[in-house]
Image 1 (tube, rainbow, N blue to C red):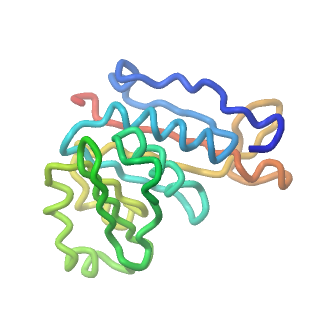
Image 2 (cartoon, rainbow, N blue to C red; image 1 turned 90 degrees about the vertical axis):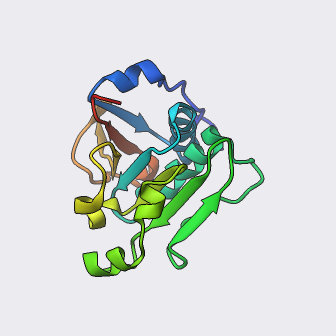
Amino acid sequence: MQPGHEIRSIQFDEKQMENRSKSFKTESPEETQALGEKIGKTLKQGEVIALIGDLGTGKTCLTQGIARGVGIASDEVVNSPSYILINEYNGRIPIYHIDLYRLEDSAEIAELGLSEYVEGDGICIIEWAERMADALPDTAIKIHITLAEVSNNEMLAPTLQSPEDENIRHIEIQYPISR
């Protein structure tokens, strides 16, 4: 971690999940993972996390934190399953990590038979979830991640001003009220 890049205390608890939407800003991969870990600690069996964001916005980084929060051992490598499509991890609740980046259309996605994961007894984390939007359950927790421009400490358009801004992420979590 570079000097001056300390992990700020990110307030996230289950009580906040009663809200419809919550936004966060992280300024380093460590902060993104810390937020993911806090999210992971609140998750329950059968939940689906739909990660939505462009290439390089931090979906896998957030997933690494979620995995730690669910109890995946810190020495277990959590990486994007872009080429194998699905990774499974065993924590206090199993995690099914799915990456739809390489799939082009809904027919390819349907052929995977993801319903057994989405409707399963673990936590299903789906990167590039917008590619199966129609097949996501209504109860899915949607997490939108964008690169963020910072000006006067406010979040603006998802563009970068300088190389120092490359780690700043805007993370919006949307979840059903019934959760």
